[in-house]
Amino acid sequence: MLEPQNNDQLTIKLLLPGEIDRIFEIQQDCNLSFWSHYDYEQGLQNPHTLIYTAKTDGKIVGFIASRLLLKGIVSESEGKDAMIYSEAEILNFGVLGSYRKRGIGSLLLKEFLQCVLHKSILTVWLEVRDSNASAIEFYFRKGFVKSQKRKNFYSLPTEDAIVMKLLLSASVE
Image 1 (cartoon, one colour):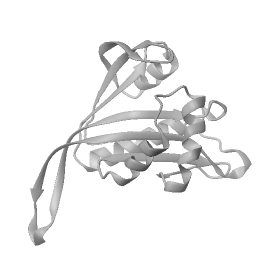
Image 2 (cartoon, helix red, strand yellow; image 1 turned 180 degrees about the vertical axis):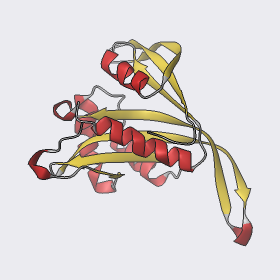
Image 3 (cartoon, one colour; image 1 turned 45 degrees about the vertical axis):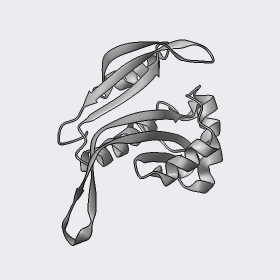
């Protein structure tokens, strides 16, 4: 389980604008889909995008970027509108290699899933490289199932993607 070094506590928080550069290091270390600085800036400004970071040892060591798929907008009392979401999609998710196997990815995923449940979202999707056996095993342990394969979905190198789906219930372990 999680064992932060130097007695630092792990914190899971939403990404701040000044932290975007750190995400690039994790993105490269994990061979994730490339997002540009602009992509992350746009994500921070988009109410349908959630980017959580995990911080320990005084630095960000993991993150999860996601998109909430809008179903519609409902007008509520006092002139406020409520967004109704149908599903969520994990777009990028990684933990630095030297911090894996400590529960950090599990805690990031749990925080994200609690957020989507709070928004009444019960279906989460993701794509993962076909060769990424450790990630696929991680997702299986978290309840995801294989849905389909997308041929040549990834580049650098070209590789198939496994599409995985998680159906949520009212609680997340």
